[in-house]
Image (spheres, rainbow, N blue to C red):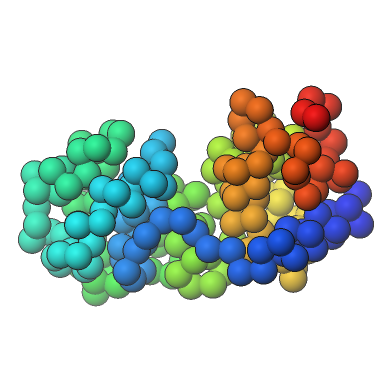
Length: 210
């Protein structure tokens, strides 16, 4: 995609939603990290429903360790892969206490060294909690990037690197939020709603719907 078209794409997305927000509920940086870990292969709505009561009683790694594995499982059992996710959250919390004084670290390397924290999860936390201009590539961002021609690639790491290179600096802080929302509500997997898409005229997708 041409540089001027990319600039126009993000200008339009910014105009539509100047301050996009993540849709996972949290009460602090630690609970955000937990929520993002739980959201892998699950919907934000499903995670929010499961954590509504949990985050009222657990908002620190110390409280999570005290809660324990089995009680955590009871809270999140409606979420897919809850057994492995619960184990990761408990061990992640222990490591935060032992290695980081109970605080969520602010570097990609430290975050991805924690159980259950991949590159996407780390980038989401760095972006939302710490304001870093990181690009978190989930299925929505991957789809929109490839369909539009913004950043085409066969895997998420390739797409992430391309996005980091082509997105104008002034839009990078919120870029992945705009692309997530675009993919979730407009550029849907099965049937994109091209007729109401504000960036349709810039999109290179050959299967546009009317």
